[in-house]
Image (cartoon, rainbow, N blue to C red; front, side, top):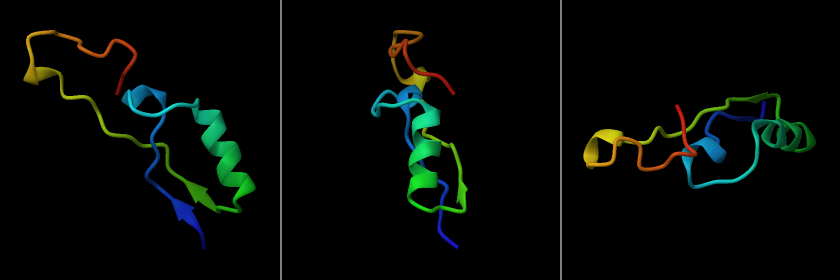
Length: 57
């Protein structure tokens, strides 16, 4: 069983591609399962309330 539960996509701010791209790549790679997860930005470590406007959890 081939799986991948750790993915990065555009919401993390340091990767590209939409989630559909990752699903299609997983199917092409023969994965039986994929998890769409990511690292969440840490907003409380600076003065800017949202330092990376293109990111989300």
